[in-house]
Length: 154
Image 1 (tube, rainbow, N blue to C red):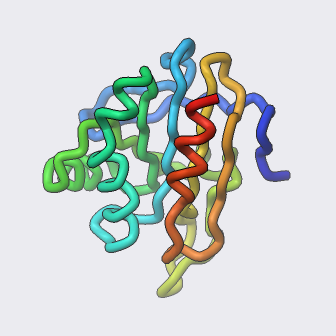
Image 2 (tube, rainbow, N blue to C red):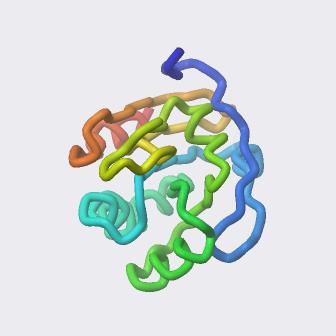
């Protein structure tokens, strides 16, 4: 069953592009915007995360943490973060457990690739509850950034 507004966000521990362990519970008391994306270095994924990068000061100003998650390795994500100058953690869900827990997972993706994160966006409130959930079936679609910002302002 898909996660809904009001559900408790599944906690996780994943390795970042800096090879440090990051957990959702480590951000308790802060709003967290989680962006799942299929693959580093692809057009729509870059556009999705660049939108967050370019508006980072807004999120920082309201004490909200931005996180990007994909099934790419931490090493690929490290290079992606460096090339795009992202100021927020990129986390590797290489084992696909978090993408699955959030319902943001393609069993089969393009080109016969299996086990790729769907494009999705979640806002988790200070208490760990989901304030916004959007999982996109079409990887070419972008999340509704206005709806994300509206959820953050509540």
